[in-house]
Image (cartoon, rainbow, N blue to C red; front, side):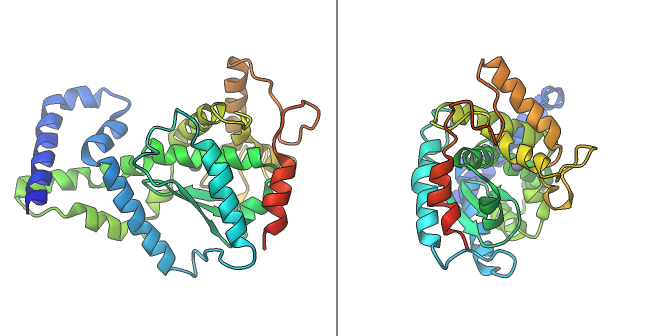
Length: 292
Ligand SMILES: [Zn+2]
């Protein structure tokens, strides 16, 4: 009961604040982030993320978690080497609250995704496709950024914010978190990041990797490899299956600009002459060789 009252008080304050600063918010580009920060706590993100983990675990047909062969070894390496190295970055701020963890789905899909509050999923298809630990670190850094920058919470604020306020006005018991959690996975919008979200996540992947042993521009390697394999069309679109990560050519260019601005040597995913260690051998031995 006390929790409900506190929650109502919090939402009431939100309501008054939004009325007071409505005009200011309307003029602010970052309104989604502001609304998410007001309506959802970091702990809400963790709670919602765990609800979705339960839903994923229950839907083994859509999300077949990799649990046979040498999965234990690979997952141990992903979490205790790659993720641990990434979390050394001082720019990752929520590692004390969010529960960052990498899980692997056994499917040929070339993709990865993050849930609110830290759970990250990588498909074996993507692990098999990539050729260096740095390239993987770039992708994981990008997914960490979706969680850290609260892109899902921003979409939830847009979708449920008004409803949460109306519940206060109408005096109804909100219990909104449970309701949102029940709809998260079916509402595919949760995982649909906007172009702005993607650009911001690439930017933060770059910032995170700068504080680690990995090459800061590694997030672009996947797209360069796709391009080299003829999987990016002339219009700049990734062919069919990777439409959740649009506009690969501009994302490669964006990362190259970040590298140049920071006076970091620009190399491509298949570069072997630069002397920069992309941890190819480690990837081959610790991950690639053990995949199903
Ligand atoms: Zn993304």
